[in-house]
Image (cartoon, rainbow, N blue to C red; front, side, top):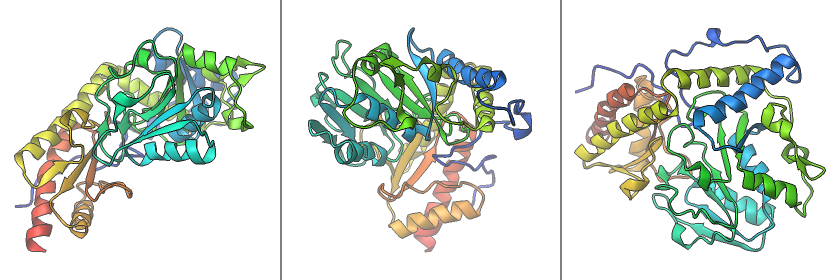
Length: 373
């Protein structure tokens, strides 16, 4: 039978992601609108975006946080173009975005001394074979595959190279071993459900040392420049952005950070993600026709939960369309490059109760499509 109770919020998209519970655009502090981002009020707001992020994430002393253009993609590109080339590079890719960094490193930067570690969707590459005398580029959580690294134990403390981590669907959702990570990137529109266009770049002291001691052989676009005269442009990490940001998006991000603080901080956000994931895991365990794309349970993503079904691709598409038409779940089809299936966003802004309510609807849709045609 068709379930009666629907999720209160049907937004399960993996990006842009659902707004926080109780969100109302009318409650944003828009005192910065119409003002220059270089004005005192603009710089205060942008500086707060950096400092509050560092505070809530509990970053180690000396780590810097900056607002940069181009969302998470821009932050990753900025790091790669500015830092790579001094050492050999090991790049790990096991889903669409990670494989995109492989392409940029080998086809755009054309770094010849590069080793590529790939894995099919649902699996991790051989991380134990990575050489930490090299620079390492990897994603923490594969947003399009639902496969995350288990932890940071595979990264040594005495590494010579830098670790550059795309963590856009992990920051504020998973425990991050900050001391193991030299560069971390994320975007506002993932776990915090804020607006797109801007990225966050977190640098360790080791990354700053590289920036100040190494100059890449290629021309550096203005949007990527983080040094001047061989020294870090500290203003970038105090709210003096490289280009003009959307002050409305900044206000929205500060609202999201305020919500994280109000629920008990990052640990509480992680608990929410875990509770939503657990609702999916219990459902999968009870039904033999639905499966995690990630083969090893220890690598299951707790945010971008990717599932495969015992159904034809057209049937899966029909399920997704049916749940959309019922107003139960929007945008849950698998990523276009991933195997056919569904992807349920379980980030912090999603209510775990809504995920639990969604699961019977998925069963209803599956049976309706596969049994009734």
